[in-house]
Amino acid sequence: MKLVVAGPFGVGKTTLIRTLSEIATLHTEEAMTETGRPVDDLAGLPGKVTTTVAVDFGRLTLPGNVVLYMFGTPGQRRFFPLWRDIARGAVGALVLADTRRLADSFEIMDMVEEQGLPYAVAVNRFPDAPEHPVEVLRTHLDLHAATPLLLCDARERDSSLDALIALAEHVLDALPAASEVPATSEVPAAPAAPADPVAPAAPEQP
Ligand SMILES: Nc1nc2c(ncn2[C@@H]2O[C@H](COP(=O)(O)OP(=O)(O)OP(=O)(O)O)[C@@H](O)[C@H]2O)c(=O)[nH]1
Ligand SMILES: [Mg+2]
Image 1 (cartoon, rainbow, N blue to C red):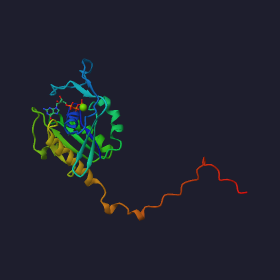
Image 2: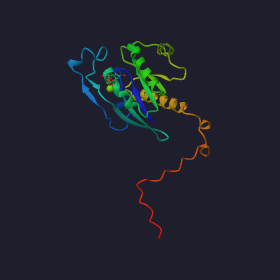
Image 3: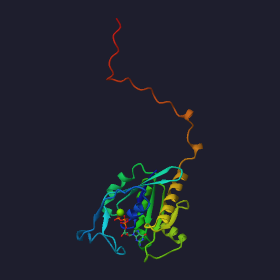
């Protein structure tokens, strides 16, 4: 499964993929600079010194040989044009949220919905972030009843894994049931291949 890990700036996408990946992650981190200070809001992120400028990539194999390919998106609006390319071929998205700025995840959820991807939301808990009951968070995020919502710490494996497994299960639930997929015999036969115009001509009959 190709899965997208999405969310606003500094919400912990790169951290979560690093925490879960069983291979050395590919990442495209660049240093945060003075030039970016007016637009890159580091409030509440004292340890953050780099930002993703293209994509993160990691892999995780679940029991049963289900292989999850995790693609992390950049969180900054100026890199959003990359989003569609990163999401191409994905079957689901994990949207990260931070309760100090929950509304920042709204436009990410909109983009995921525009792509038609099933998604789960993981609230990444920062120490000074307000805590709310899950039902209150669901209401604020206006989540569909079937959309999983989990709390996690992106630096810690167990809760991050729970969030990704909840997404994988949700993706599998969203697949059409076997009874809805046409049986092989009902699939129309492929049309006969057209004659190959560059094939060598048959030898002339004497
Ligand atoms: N306390 C706490 N800090 C975290 C957690 N997850 C990430 N951090 C820190 O928060 C900062 C942001 O993490 P990143 O993983 O770079 O966030 P990102 O979403 O990939 O950021 P961009 O790619 O720049 O949008 C880093 O300094 C992390 O060490 C968490 O669960 N708890
Ligand atoms: Mg990142």
